[in-house]
Length: 215
Image 1 (tube, rainbow, N blue to C red):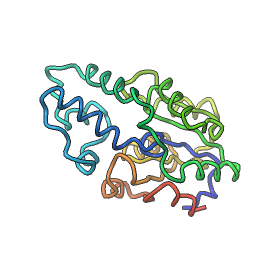
Image 2 (spheres, helix red, strand yellow):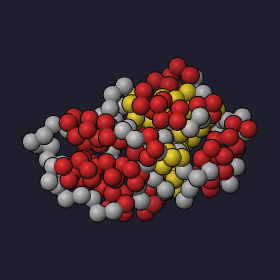
Image 3 (cartoon, rainbow, N blue to C red):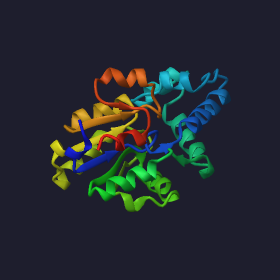
Image 4 (cartoon, rainbow, N blue to C red):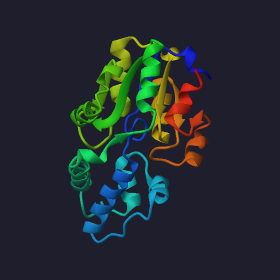
């Protein structure tokens, strides 16, 4: 399936364009250790348990959500995650890829489970807002309604779903794309292992640059 058939690219953000995997592991381990819970061993172990809904991922990480409301560690995670902007960087060739798609005349948006104000703050760090027609996040920090945000965008934009592809890094991105009725490509440098992504039966790329080669 070649990108030349598409007019619209729907980008996930975290783990797809933004390289924040190691920082997410550091933050979640800080929360675990502060609770006397064993930290996640390494990136491989993190990628094995990460997923959506986020509340289920927290349980797999070891949080006792029967005795502590999910909202408490979730809020702590967001506060620490955004406490040091120096921790954030883009994946290699991300900007080149975005610019290449712009030169092709493709319309690009970000659709993220991140809270919308946090999302806009992050994208502004890298001066890449010009690459996107819209930056769409959700209205709270608990990562529940990415599908709803996507459906609302499709409804008001008149997007031709047959000419749109969602590019992400998790099984959840595939599930979102399937629900929205658009195609999906996945990248295996983010928050979930490639062997998990391949189970979706769709194209999986090792890095963001590899997608350009499909044009």
